Image 1 (tube, rainbow, N blue to C red):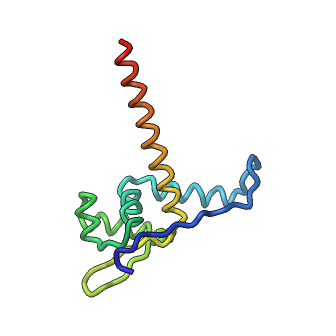
Image 2 (cartoon, helix red, strand yellow):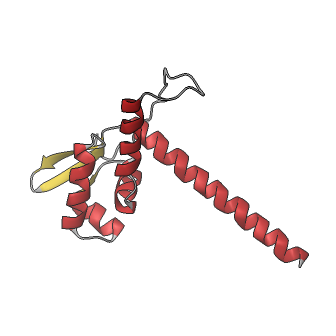
Image 3 (cartoon, helix red, strand yellow):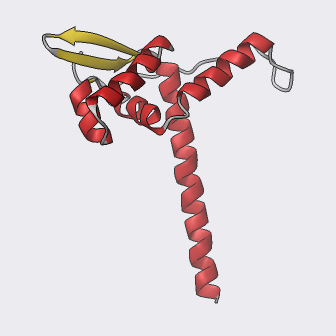
Length: 129
């Protein structure tokens, strides 16, 4: 499905709210956030959530070399976040974890709303001055 947008699923958890998380689950969750802590990898997931792209396109859109993007993709692939397939001489990348797309969209939306709130507050304080 070339260019297809990723359809996300709503994950559920069996861990009761307020109860401590099991150590292995906690470590796996921290590792997921760790893999996204590099802004380039976060940007890759964000872009691929809209549809597949080749490595050269990702490099151009993110403003990094193909070699640098390939290194980020290798880490994302190892973590099960993306899938890479060959199409002739091109490497085509897709998201392989729709739940992670949900998390990324949620956190990006949170920060957009937070910035808007802070901006509105700054504007109202400026008007009062």
